[in-house]
Length: 391
Image (cartoon, rainbow, N blue to C red; front, side, top):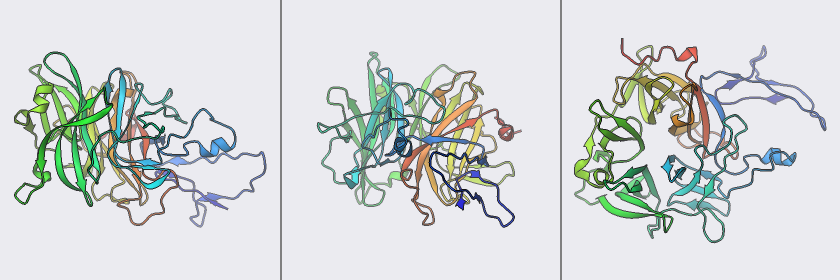
């Protein structure tokens, strides 16, 4: 007897409520087990970590996919740079020691990290590596704790030169920021260099939660007057600045925005926002968001919601739950709206899949603490209640 279970997917229950099937494995035989997708979004596959095709390799299949030297990694950021896509991840596990890279992992790919968006996906990461061929940190520092990068974007200065920039945070203990500032990519050194300290922890300093910083995910927006802006936020926008390098470097040019912290579902129940991202959908001709709910059920940080709006600042439609987990976490989702063409109804997104912040679940081997890719069919009838107005 084989029990069958999967987050957001179901195998039919028998008369006693057991979900599974009985069969005897035989050499050379195969069996297809079909599950019904109970959630709206489709899980495509795992993007990062070891053993992406470990079982297939035992059958001499998909041998074109090799190990990368990355076991697990947290919270992705991405932007276009030099004709490629530039990727960053946070804390990273490696095979040789339980504690791996804590000063940001990075890689480049083409526009998408694989040739096909259909399963099975085969990511083709070009990780930045050291002289031994191992994935390495991207920000050089003697700081003993983690250094996280956010607000990753390419921005041009007034002379037309492009810059790859980000916000950095030095972390102490459990999630405590002690220094925050601006950094820029050095193409020559292939590392990020600190430009400016914006905030540091002192007995007199304000909480970093009170700061308005060019952090989180970045979205470009042109207003009704033809002015181009960069919007920053770890969910909905909380800061904007004009789309120039000089404005990015000048804190006096940063304009705070009151972020959306809560939406309502179609029954008018509140849905608290934890982390997420927004993007323009060329298919819908509207703004869309996917975010993780704070305090969701059945998973505290494992329920993801979708909404849309005519403006990046709202008002937003009723939220529709599109991803669910049974006592597991999927946080810090990132959108890939540019992977779909004008006539393509799919919205792709990923998030960090981890047993952290759940109620002591059994970690999923190889998948735990890695990035999982999903896609949402924007023509799905179950999304029809997500209207871009509030009528």
